[in-house]
Every structure is written in C-alpha cells, then in structure tokens.
Image 1 (cartoon, rainbow, N blue to C red):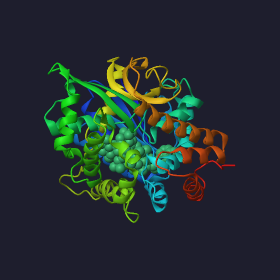
Image 2: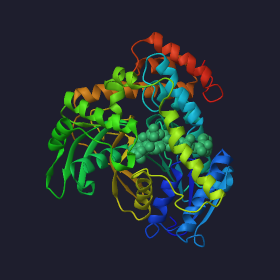
Image 3: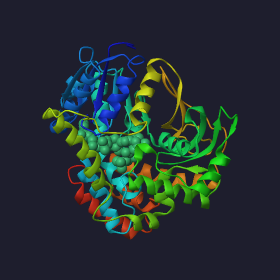
Image 4: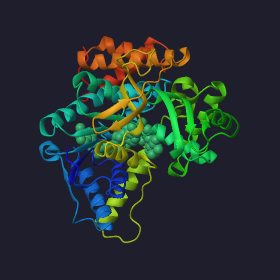
Length: 444
Ligand SMILES: NC(=O)c1ccc[n+]([C@@H]2O[C@H](COP(=O)([O-])OP(=O)(O)OC[C@H]3O[C@@H](n4cnc5c(N)ncnc54)[C@H](O)[C@@H]3O)[C@@H](O)[C@H]2O)c1
Ligand SMILES: O=P(O)(O)OC[C@H]1O[C@H](O[C@H]2[C@H](O)[C@@H](O)[C@@H](O)O[C@@H]2CO)[C@H](O)[C@@H](O)[C@@H]1O
Ligand SMILES: [Mn+2]
C-alpha cells in the first residue's frame, strides 16, 4: 500500500460535510500524507461551489503548493489511482429527502430520513448508486479503501455485502461518537478515556458498559442516573439546533422507561413513534431545516469567495464528524488498530443473532481492514426482538431491490416497527413508487 502522496476522492464532493472532512484532512497531514484531492459529484454546480471552498481552505493554510484539488463528474478521472475514497452521497438530494419525510408523515407515520418508511424509500434509491460507485472502484482503483458513511447505512451495507462480499469497504456512522461526546461534555467526562461496549443495528443500538480508564470503573450506572435526573443538553457542535435538542431530551425519557442501557437516540422513532410524529410539522420537516441552514450556509460561503469578500468566510461545525472519518483512514494507513463502532457482518460478534445481519459493534481498524470484536455475551430478549424485526424488514427491502419485487417491498414496509398495519404500509409504498419514479427499480 502506498503510504505517501496519497490520492483521496470525496464522492458526493458537493455535500456540505466536505469542508469538515477537508479541515480534518489538513489537521492530520503529519499522519496522513495526501497530495491530491478529488471532489467527485454528479452535480457540477454544487461541486464547483465546493471546489472554491476547499481551495480557499487549502490556500488559507498555505498548502496550495503541496495539495492539488480538482472537481469532476468523470469516474475515470476521479477514481484512477485513488488510495482512499470517502463516500457521502445523497441520492435525489434534499428535495427527495423532503418526500421521504412528508409522505409517511401525511399518513400519521414517522417522517425521518433513516428511520421508518422514509429510510426505506431512501434505501431503495441509494442502493443502485452505491453499487455503481463500488463498481467504478473495482475497475479504476481495486486496491483503494472505501470509507462509506452514506445513509441509510444498514440497507446500503447489506446490499454491498451481497453484491461485493470481498470489497475493501468500511461502513461507519458518527452517531455513537456524537452520543458519547454529548454525554461526556454534559457530565464532565473525557471520552478519550472510554472503552465503550455497544451493539445494535445502525441508528438502532445500546451501550452495555462504558469503562473509564482514568476512573478505573464502568461508569454506565452513573451515566444512566444522570440521564434520568438531569437530562441531556445539546453540545456546542449542535447548538441552536432544536431537532438535536429534542433528540437528547428523548434520551432521558428512554432511559427512565428502560433503565438498563444507554440507547442510541434514533430509537425514539421506534419506541415512541406517536410522540415523535406529534412533534413533526408536515409543512416544515428536517429536510426544510437543513436546506435553510447547512445548505444555505454552504452556498453563502461559496458566493463570498467568488465575490472576494474578506473576513471570516468559513462557517461550519460538525463536531467530530470529519475527524472521525480521517482517523479511520489514518488507522488503516498506519495500522493503528483504532477502535470504532462499525457496521459489519455479524458472524458471531453478537452470539445470539443471525450471522448474516449487518450489525454495529466495536471493531479495530488496521492495515488489513476491520476486525470486529466478539461481544461474548448474549443480548437480552427485548433488544434481540427489536433488532430481529428491524433486521428482517431491512433484509426484505434489499431482497425487493435485487428481485424487483413489490411483494417483498410490501412485506418490508409492513414489518417496519413504525407501521401499525398493512393497509397504511401499502398506501405509503404506492405513493413512494410514484414519488421515486426514475430512482427505484420497477417493482413487479
Ligand atoms: N453516517 C453518518 O454518520 C453520516 C453523517 C452525516 C451525513 N451522512 C450522509 O452523508 C450523505 C450526504 O449528506 P448531505 O446532507 O451532505 O447531502 P447533500 O445532498 O448536501 O450532498 C450530497 C451530495 O451527493 C451528490 N450525489 C448524489 N448522488 C451522487 C452520485 N451518484 N454520485 C456522486 N455524487 C452524488 C449530490 O449531488 C450532493 O452534492 C447522506 O447520505 C447523509 O445521510 C452520514
Ligand atoms: O438531519 P441532519 O442531516 O442534520 O443530520 C442527520 C445525520 O445525523 C447524524 O449525524 C450528526 C452527528 O452525529 C452530529 O455529531 C453532528 O455532526 O451532526 C450530524 C448531523 O448534522 C447521523 O449519524 C447521520 O447518519 C445523519 O445523516
Ligand atoms: Mn449515522
């Protein structure tokens, strides 16, 4: 493997997460020696705007002579001789995310981008594009590592597992980092001292223990107590974001009712679907918020650079998101065996769950890839039951994609735990088929 002068490709270069990734890449140059950065996107306008921002970031650090940056929509140019590929696409953009959220919500169901039927709609749209990208990598850079965080992750990674079982791809989500960081900042801990044991599906899991090395004990019992008694406030990187504030408040509720484990916040959509629906506004969902905030701020940054406006141009803060992705790349390159929560094929990691489920468990990352940690305990029936139903629904959805099967899709929609009956499942599925024309396979 090449260790220096690396070529990095950001797939979905126009994503508003790109500046955060670039900031982390720049900050990690002593551990990750890259000299070429490619923004690859199918939307040239977004990609060109981002090129301006990234060039500005690199120029600001005086690195324009050591790092070349280019934007392209040509896969051959993008992937040839690539070493690392970061994948962050949103198929259909935020306009389709709006449909994912609003169609179920219209029927009184959870309207969310990765949970519930919105996640299934997004999944059926995304599989084809991710498989295309993996195919390009096989053709132009078969030795490259793909770090994937495109959502909905369990569905995407299940499809890739079936189509490319040996691909060098790491599936990662920053949510556990964000949960840990928010808890640590609220209660005065340092997450860097933690060895957490976590298990689940993506956006659907629980902490079993959190061992703090500096205190020499499992601090989960005291965290559970504080969650119940003090609640959880939004950390500075999500400050002013009401959706995140509400999500952290719901964590306290989950723990009050189920006091044996710190949950992933996304479980609120499954455990309290009715309550989350009541808080949603059919005329203004999360997609609208993101368009009016993150997307707008990105456009303003590009505009200011284009118009040579001086002063403080850069305006983004995604907490640990970018650094987490880059740390994983560093861990591969330097064979560091860093420990991350990753989405992997179970194969016994959770002993009493089917082997071919894509689960999220602690894993080491090194030069040869991912080494998942076997939990060596059986998970309880409550978590197991929830996970098995969710996993079966996701597997049926991926079957529906490969078999172009309406029957499998309807079963997946009906089994989704945010759905009360098959009638409403069918109505939402039929509306999604129309809304996703040109994106979904033709279900027969
Ligand atoms: N797992 C995580 O921790 C995590 C965290 C943040 C974001 N994400 C995911 O990252 C992705 C990007 O999110 P965003 O809000 O920045 O979306 P966005 O719409 O702002 O940006 C995505 C970009 O992908 C491009 N794109 C779409 N299809 C493409 C294709 N086939 N090939 C190349 N480019 C393509 C779009 O043109 C767009 O510029 C989403 O899937 C999101 O869910 C994951
Ligand atoms: O609604 P969005 O698009 O703002 O966020 C959806 C994503 O939420 C999680 O990522 C968080 C991250 O955990 C937090 O630290 C901070 O950086 O905000 C991110 C979102 O902006 C989740 O893990 C992702 O999968 C979602 O895409
Ligand atoms: Mn995630």
